[in-house]
Length: 87
Image (tube, rainbow, N blue to C red; front, side, top):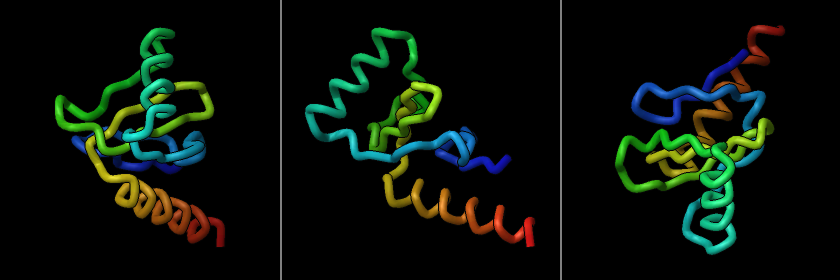
């Protein structure tokens, strides 16, 4: 299992990550609010401004203070590491 660092020592499973999106649009804000209402929101931003929203296949929504491109780069690095172990 590969883990992606999403800031402040927090890690998420690369295989469970569905999408990394910017929190600026109204539909994403609605997604975050609905997850909060259902008790499925995890705030990993440590009080900082939320710069990315991670949607997991477990229906959890995670807030991160990292830019989406940073999370993407770390996720791609995790995928490369995974293929290195297989070969």
